[in-house]
Length: 109
Length: 112
Image 1 (tube, rainbow over the protein chains, first blue to last red):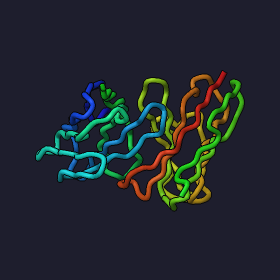
Image 2: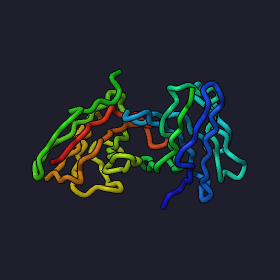
Image 3: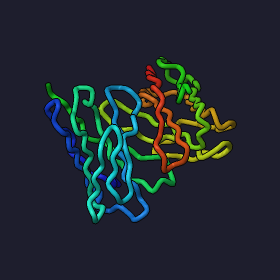
Image 4: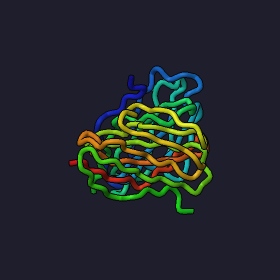
């Protein structure tokens, strides 16, 4: 059973913020929210993860709602190189991650 | 650090042939895993290992064997290749399950 729901595709104008939503209404208290992305046919790349609090790193920000049932990945200034498939994954960290189909983000010049 | 390396990059097999996909990491990671990705699909977990000598099955283990004799290496064996195994195979490693996973560049396998 899928633990997350993501839109299949999104567009974003270059230079604007890209906000990628993810629903995980059945998340358990010990489960983390992970975000990865896959550019073209390369191996997936880790972006960020969090448990309860919002997180920020050099790549992106992760906003988790207070009830933890949804989250948003924010790429503050999207570039053409951010065009990729973005995966939102919920996992307790006890086993390797299970990937869904993700959101295909297209950054448009 | 080389990170996660995979060989070969490309491979063509005939139905019924066997082969081993190699995966190595130099980060002293305990966790290693194998995924396959079919065209237009997400990644599916084949097998994984939480340390040397310990392996377990993922979502799609049939037709594949693994072993983990060292921390560094985690080879994936195709016992008798079938066209349904045509895919891109990714190996990944992490310090622990909760930490970020590092992925290799992939092996593109075609079975005719």
